[in-house]
Amino acid sequence: MMTQQKTDGEIQVCLPDLPKTEGETTGGDSSTHTSHDEPILDGGWGWVVLVGCFTINFISDGCAYSFGVLYTELLDSFNESKSKTSWVGSLFFSVPLLCGPVSSVITERVGCRTATIMGGLIAAAGFLSSSFVQSVEAMYFTYGIVAGFGMSLPYLTSILVISQYFKKRLAFATGVAECGAGVGTIAFAPVTAALFSTYSWRGTMYILSGIAANIVVCGALFRPIKGKNLCTNMKKDCQKKEPQDDETESALLGHAREAHGDDSLCCETDTCPNGDITCAKPAAQDTTTEGETPSYAHMLPKTEKSPKDNRKQSNDPHPECVSTCHPHLRRLSRSLHLTLFTHPIFLLFITSNFILYFWFDVPFVFLANRAVLSGMTEARAALLVSVIGILHTVGNLVYGVAGDMRRLSLPLLYGVSISLCGVTLLAVPSSSAFLPLACMAGVFGLLSASSEALSSILLIDIVGEASLSQSYGFTMLLKGIANLVGPPVAGWLYDVSGSYNNTFYAAGTCLVIAGLMYTPTPLLRRCSRCHHADENTLK
Image 1: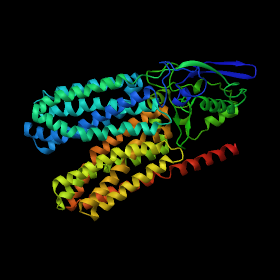
Image 2: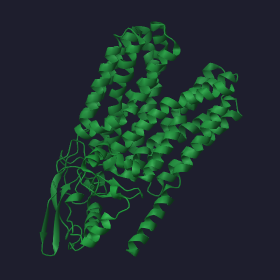
Image 3: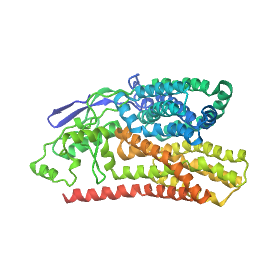
């Protein structure tokens, strides 16, 4: 809990003794030590947490992408149509993403550790109950919905907990964790095929249930970060400031952030339609749920505003940015975090992300089939998809390292990478030989990793770490809708034209547009800052 004391001419603010980075613990005073209540950021227990996140992605994506083997077994067991049976896998792919907002609310309430354990237990129960079903419709519920929702919770928390334990190496840690998805995709398919041949698909569901239960162990590793109180005298650590005007509060926030990290002082934000994020209210009470970072900006001294200032506030053209809305409507908006959708750059990002994932599965689903229709053997065509998976795994590491380079503009890197993915898809219809298609598949796999390795970092940059859970939950929701609708639309283009060329042309064009949409973000921010600076000067 943060307290403040005022004396003549100085302000003393009590800040939490926040976790130290690995560099801070190794350098400085030799008497400095770190206790179990002070986890080391960018190292220490964070590496154990990273192993847990890697394992979660290994299990969740491994189970998902091995459904192709299960699909054949379900066709033989239930004798249903291919379309009806395929909905089992479609639900299992989409439900974890569609439940993103629900998972973010649960995670906010109970913390990352408890939410991950809950998700592991739910997923294990879904796989276990699937072994007893006698119809495809029952599989929709047990495998698609129950197990799918169970996977949604750890999928979200594995992103959130990394942002709590890593700061300077956040992009690298995210990339390493996402590599678990690629490794799981490569490893699970042959393993599940062997299990099906030995134990049948029902017996394999028992084993998958036990594998999913290991997510509970991963969740237990997500030790919540809790700090101790440390009184920081502004005279010694920052500066002495007299509470005379609004500049005092901004200066205190700036110095405190400088001393304790940008994310140590943050409050839940209300976002104005003009793109500004205003610190309108505290994000939480003085106590925090496990795994959450406390918010202290609201405890800083506030100055009295003159009646003239109040009149200016009441005449604000966007009254939703101030406390003038009906309390019940504001409470509903805060619980759903709908204010995020008034942030223009956030809207730009999720729109670009939606277009990307609408067409993202095109090379995974249709590239091999197009190669076979062009005269390539099925074995060589299957290698094209493997090339995408392997280079995608490598790409997560590459973009993880690049994302931590301060000289690089992450929005520009993301936008250019996605646009080049589109250019690669546009070039696919120009060739039918294995080597050119393998090169294109590799380039696509490498560049498309930017969407996974950089998404959480870009969201933190847009809305702040305090809103990462909600913003990533909404992003998951739109990804789920895109993944559910995109492949049928891409397949419909083939049915209409009789060729996959139009499918790849459409996918490539849309990906180029998605990348170009987000590329000018740094310029838009710079123009917005200049505009608001001019307004403040005039005032």
